[in-house]
Image (cartoon, rainbow, N blue to C red):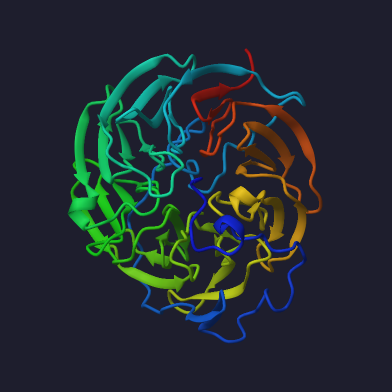
Length: 453
């Protein structure tokens, strides 16, 4: 069974049939005429909880170097690369600079300075490798026992992408062990067994939410009765705070600066929580998930147009939320027809969202929608599954087949600038896009693509 074939869905072989493509209607793009209520997959749920506004949090994340891709979704945790990273790509694409054989998993590469890190599984070991950016030569390897076995297939390798700074690399294994390694030589600095410490379970596909590096702390969605979200001190792994008791999702925490106050958005199994990163207090909550048990929230929240977009598959769809009074989030529109991301997080450019709509195994569309209204601007129907990143006014769309497509971030029409085979098949992990190189992971290799100098 493929990783995305969860039981309990309608249609043959447990697969949910994709909805017919059509423009949003009044029934599915709904203004918040009924504050506090929202129709979610046929049931009424509370749209938000109100909590007093928290004081400004002093936690500040240092600005990464332009050439770095230090964690999942990049330096700003928003899928945005250096603005000129896609400039100069010829129509026939860039050649492969180097490639290295790696094991299985869906964890993406991260880049800091002259090092690229990849977390993968080989036989019965989870392996964190450090390679040279310029030529792919190994710098060091850290190997650890691997015990996870996926419930629904798709491989037993790690799914969470590491986070790194100049001194340390942090990796969350599929069985729930969080490790901090020395960036210089791969020595183990500290580790925490999140499954045992917080009573967390591995879920359908293991622990898979990528840690958020935020200044002196690492924010991790672990899930479990003792804590849903935990902040660890990067220096020694001490627990700084714990928040919530929800099960984890597969979306990853995202920072949000609202009215001068830094907050963290966590899209867990039950929906969206807004958390104070200084002390872990939950400031607000927005329930959003499929009614069936065998489902996951896998795409990360997207900050766009002064609000937040969340999305899920399994007949759930997307919702655009705007700040209300205090910490309240008010739904502006919702529905399953605009942009229902299965696991690939959309990107926002100029108030518009670009992303994949529909189940991975059903051949999703790639489309652009107006974040403020949910209106579909254009759609490339049955484009296939992949991931998307932005660099200035251009998009890198990496298909699972390993084909790379460069598009304009153009809300009026789809304009393709380049298309070429960048890697082999099985390229489901999010790539790393630095100033002058791309790092892609397919089913069996880590690949560096870039101009020949």
